[in-house]
Amino acid sequence: MVPHRPAASADDRQGRRRLRWLGAALLLVAAACAETSGDAVTGSEPAAQDATATHTTAARDACTPLADLPGGDVANAPEQNREFPWDRADPAVLDGFDFTQVISGGPPPDGIRPIDTPCFDDVGTAGEWLEPQSPVMVVEVEGDRRAYPLAIMTQHEIVNDVIGGTPVVVTYCPLCNSGLAFERTVVPEGRGVADGQVLDFGTSGRLFQSNLVMYDRQTKTLWTQFTGEAVVGEDFLGTELVRIATSLVGWADFAEATPEGLVLSRDSVSGRDYGRNPYPGYEGAGDGFLFDGPRDDRLPPNTRVVGLGTDIDPVAVVLEQLRTERVVDVEVDGEPVTLWWAPGQASALDRAQVDDGADVGSTGAFVSILADGEVGTFTQADGEEGLFTDEETGSTWNLLGEAVGGELTGSRLQPVPLDDTFWFVWFAFQPDTAVIGADALDG
Image (cartoon, rainbow, N blue to C red; front, top):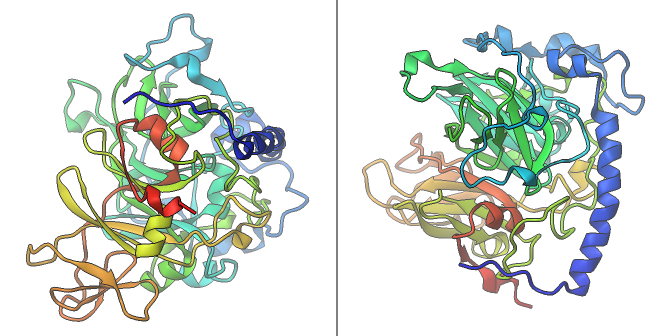
C-alpha cells in the first residue's frame, strides 16, 4: 500500500492554522505543568501550588497511597547513569526506525510530570467531583479494576502503578487520545522470567508521529506509547511491553459497574486544576501537533476510529459507524470480536472544561465467545443505553463486558485491547490496516 498525501483542502488549511495556535498553547501548558527537574523525577511535592487550582491537599489523608494497597510496594530495578539517546554520539536504534523523526514537543524530560506515587479514592469520594460524562480510563488486572480520570491523565500522561499485584504503566497521550496500559516488568533477551526487571517510566518530552515517547528511568531507553516498543537504546531494543486491555468510558458506566473500585485521586499531586482542559479545540483540529508522518485519504486525518489488532491483522472501525450501529462484529487476529458503543462520555480534548466536551461515547471490545464456548450474537438492549443482549441466552451485558441479567449473570467476556484514537496516528503506526465504516462519513 502506498500512502497518499492529497492536496490540502480549505478545511485542512484551517486545521493547520489552528494547530499552529495549539503549538503555542502547548508551550504554555508545558510551562504550567513543569516543576523543577528534581521535583519531576523524585515525585516530591512542588514548592508552590497553582494559583488557579480548584482543589488543594486539604483532603489528602482521605486517599489511599499505592504503598498501602496489597502488593503495592514494588521495588524498581536500579537506575543506571546514562545519557538520553539524543545526547549520545551513536545511540542504538531499532532497525527500520527513523530516530530523526523523534522531535521535541516543548517540555524537557518529565516536564510533563508523571505520577510515581499514585493515591486512590473510593467511588463515593471520586463521585464528589466527577460528573456522569467525565471521561475515565479503565484498567483491570486480576480483578483489581481502577479508573484514571482523563482530567488528571491529560496533565500527567503517565502513572507508574501496581494493579492486582502486577507493576503497570498507565499512559494517556492527549495528542492521539490513546489510553494504553502495559506491564512494567521486562525480561532481557536470553534471560528467564525470574530475571525480569521492573522499570518505571517518564515522559521524554519528545514525540514520534505526534505520539508520546516514554523513557525508562533505569536505562533511558525510548519507548513509543502507541506500540509499547523499545525503539532507541542499548538494553531492550525491539522489546515490546506486554499490553493490558483498557477502555475509555464515562464515569457513570464505571461507577455503576464497579462500586468497590479504586479511582486515581486528585490528591496524588497537589495544587492542580484538574477540571481544566489544557488542549481546548484539539478535537477535530486536523493533523496532530507536529505530525509529519504518512497520510492516507480513506478518511480525514482527525476522524475518530477504534483501532484493533496487531501488525498481523489491524482494523480501524470508524466511530461514526459504531455510533450508528451500536454493535459491530469484526475478526481480530483470528478471533471473533464484538465492538460496542454507548453515549455518555465527554471528549477530554474539546472544550476549555473537560466535562463540557462533545459526547463521543464509550466503547468496549470483547471476544464474542460465551461461557459455554458458543460464539455469541450481540445487539443493543431494547430501550437500554449502555446495555447489550446476546441472542443465544437473552442475557444482558454492561459496557464492561459483564453479564448483569439473565442466564449468564455473573459471567464475563474476555476484553480485547483497543485504542480510541484518531485516523492520522492509527494509519501512521498501522499502514496496512483495514477500514470499516468509511461510508458513515458521507454527507
